[in-house]
Length: 150
Image (cartoon, rainbow, N blue to C red; front, side, top):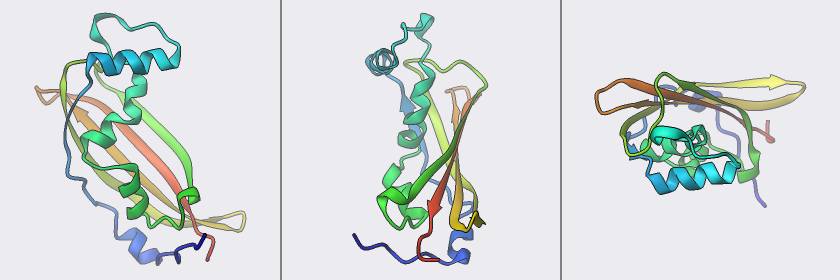
């Protein structure tokens, strides 16, 4: 496997503020049922969506993909990403059959060296709003892009 060369610090910093196209996403009942079932939990009452939906709903609703997120950070290889954190904030209950408006951008991107290892730390922020414009949830994803060639 051939690794891609590490990008410059400047090219990584330049992606801060990158906005994804954004869009809409509705968590269907069947989708919520399957997500809930795979966690081993009982269905939530009153059409509440299982929180695990925040792993994929924001990314799909913002009209992006894991592959695009890898590419924006110029990942050297598919296995060069380390998940630092997924932070979920709920401002309102997440529900089935509600069309959420999703916006997203890169809020941080910088190069770091810790314990002799160099990586780029990139943070993606996804916001969900209900049809009335009420801020419902935020997902902040922070990944580390390992740089073996530095």
